[in-house]
Amino acid sequence: MERIKIDEPRWDQTTYQGRANHFFTTTNPLNLLCSDKELDKAKEIVVKYRKDGQLNGLTIGDLWKAKHVYDSAFHPDTGEKMLIIGRMSAQVPCNMFITGCMMTFYRTTPAVVFWQWINQSFNAIVNYTNRSGNSPITNQQLGTSYALATSGALVTALGLNSLTKSMSPIIGRLVPFAAVAAANCVNIPLMRMHEIQKGITVSDEHGNVLGESSIAAKWGITQVVLSRIGMASPGMVLPPLLMNYLDRKGFLKRFPWSAAPIQVTLCGVLLTFATPMCCALFPQKASISVDSLEPELQAKIRQSPTAPSVIYYNKGL
Image (tube, rainbow, N blue to C red; front, side, top):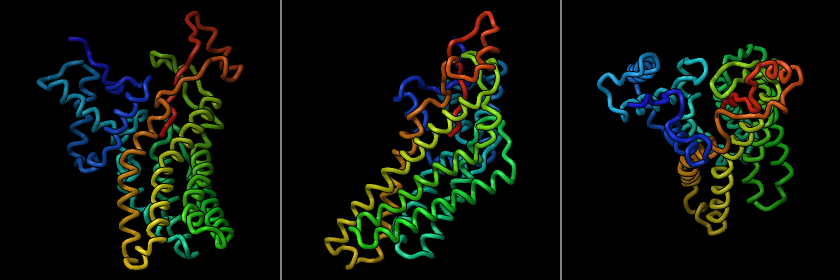
C-alpha cells in the first residue's frame, strides 16, 4: 500500500474546498473535549507512523482521525501542545460568547472598555499560540502589542460611539466590528514583529530550508489579518442588522433580557461556518515567487543548480 502523506492535510490544499474541509475538521469545537491522554495518544500514532510508515493494526480512517486531533492541539512547526484557548478549535465557543457580549453591551463606556479588553486578551493568546514556526516573542513585545491593540480597539470603539450617537442606531451597533478590525490590524503585526524584523523560514517544495525572508513574513501576516477580519465579519454584521430590526418592531422592549442570548447564539452559528471558511481563504503553506524575495536571499537560492522559482512558508493562523 502506498505510504500516506501524514505531514500533509488529508484534502488538497491547492483548492479552497480542500482547505475548507481541513479547517472544518481542525476548528471543530468537539476537539476541545479530547483529554490530554487522547491528545498524547494521537501524537504517538502520528509520530510513530512518520518513523516507520506502518499502520500497526489501525485503519486509514483511524490514522487520519488521530492526525486531525493532533493538528487541532499541536503546533504545526514546533510540535508543542498549544494553550487550550489559543487553539483554533476554541475559536467558535470563545468568540461566540465574547462577540455576543461586545455587541450587546456597547452603549456604556465601562462595558465597552471591559469587553474590548477581554477580546484583545483572547486575541493576544490566540496570536501568540499560532505564531509561525520557532519565532520567539519577548515579554516586552507581547506586552507592547497587547497594550497597543487594546488601546487601538478602545480608541476606535469609544471614538465611534461618541460620533454615532446622533446617527441611526444600526451604525452604533456596528461600532464593535470597526473596533475589532482596527485592533486586528495592530495586534497581529505587533505580535509577530520578530518575523518582520528577522524573517520567516522559507523552504522548497520538499521542505528543504533555504533561508529567512521578511518579505514572506509580511505577506503571511497580511493574509492572517484579512482572514481574521473576514472571520469576524458575519458574526459582527448580521446580528446587529437582526437586532436593529427586532428593536424597531418593539421585540427588545418586551423582552429586554433576550438581547444577549440571541446575539451569542447567532454568533455561534455564524462563527461555526465563518471560522473554517475564512481560515481557508489562503493556503497554510503559502508560496511566493523567488523574484519577490530580498535580493540577497534570491542570490543565495539561485546558487543551487536546482534553484526553485517558487518557495514556501507557513503563514501562521
